[in-house]
Image (tube, helix red, strand yellow):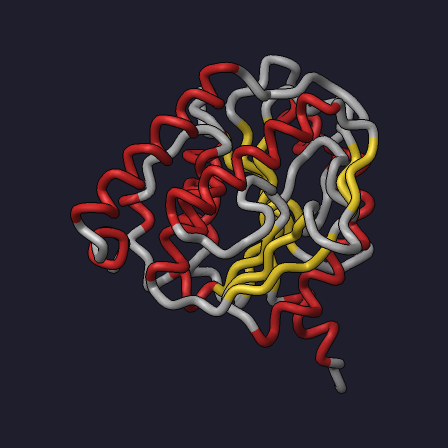
Length: 251
C-alpha cells in the first residue's frame, strides 16, 4: 500500500504534552490532534483535577499517559516524556502546551517543515507570528526573556521561551539529557542552548499563539527568577570557558 511522505511523517511523530490541572482543555486538544494521525504522550504531574484519569477513561487509540507522581515542573516533565519515547522508533518529537495556546494547524506545518532540520521552533516574535489575548506585561516578559538569553548566550533566535517545537530523534540521542537541569520555562532556553552547542540545524517558523482557553497560567515569580539566575550563570561560565556548553551537553 502506498503511503505518502506526509502520512509517513505523521506516523513517525509523537507529540509530548505536559499537564498539571488541564482537565478543562486537554480532551479538546487531543481530539484536534487526532486528525493528524500522530501519537500523543501526555506527561501528567499528578494533577489534583484528575487530568490523567480523564484521558485514560476516554480510551483514545493513539494516546498514552505518563504519571510523574508529583509536580516537578515543565522541564522534568518533558525530559521524562523524551526518555520514554526516544527509543520507540519515532523520527520526530513535538513539544506543545496543553491549554490550547498552540494551534494544531501550526503543529501540522511544523511537522511538514521538519524534514530538512534537526529542530524547528515555533516563533511568535517574527514576521507572520502573532499573539492574541496576552497582556502587555506577559508579552514584555517573553520578549525580554528572549532578548536577555540571546545577548547572554549568543543564541541567534527570535523566540527562546516558546513551547511549540519539533526535535529530530536521532539528534536528541547525541545530547546528554541528564545534563539539562532547568525546571520551569527556562527549560526551553536550555534545550536550544544544548542542541545549538552540538551543531544542530535549527529553523524558526512563525506561529499564532492564543492565551489559554481554560485553566490557570503556570507562570510564577519563581519561574522567572530561575530563568534569570540560570541564564546569568551560563553567561558568566561562557566568559571563562567558551566551549563549556559543547563539552557539558555532549553524550
